[in-house]
Length: 299
Image (cartoon, rainbow, N blue to C red; front, side, top):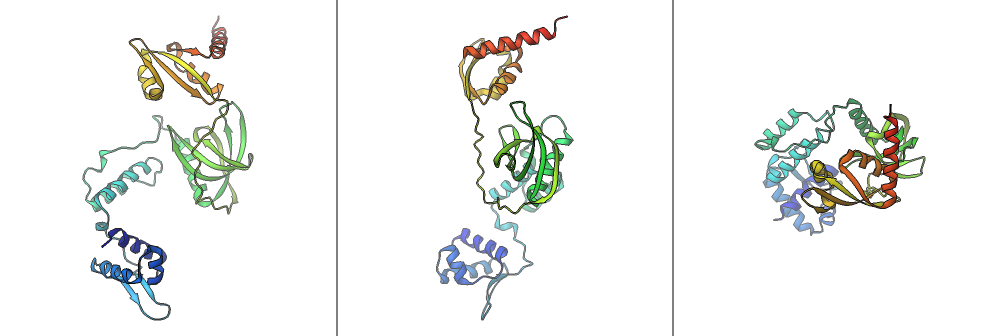
């Protein structure tokens, strides 16, 4: 007996309602005789499944039936708990008491063995509101408008059809069809300001859209950086895979940046604990910027 197939039959009937044996056999790629054997097995598991004869008949499950927790494996129960642990960090609707109830139902001990937290250390209520407003717009297919600050210091007003929220690296992104660019774009949530959900709705079916997770950058710059060991903790955290040399005093990293703006901001965030080794034009630019900073602090 194929338990996986039985599970598929139960879920198919719960989702689609009354179906014929022929329909189920085609869906599962088995014979009609096998379908009827599976129905007997499902009924033996105390699931109220019925075969109705005659015109308009078919196979169905009592619409009031609730799937027993016994149909889930221990691993599947744990996966559900972990998924909810993640979701509760992004939506206040997912409360701890829901996790407690499911843990009791599944008899999962110590459901707090893992903690997934997508939020930053600062309690930013505005950020939470942006996240939940975008979620609402996606579910209800509402057009949104907002001001967006791109990495090249450009501020634009965008009008978009939201598709999905994506957590990548260390940040949340909105994947949406941008009506200004007439193409799909990623928008970093922390850079979205003055978000407004418009009354306009859209009919485009983006549910089956394969998310393009390649965030392509133009004008990639390859640099080599030397870090003082006093910031080793941060280099290991953020650039561990790019370390090419690790000695007693310094760490050397080779990495590509998406554009000049990201590069210079990142380098300066390390203060005097970093030096650009190459390319030479970046070293010169860093020096010029440092001199301008120094001028600001001259009395």
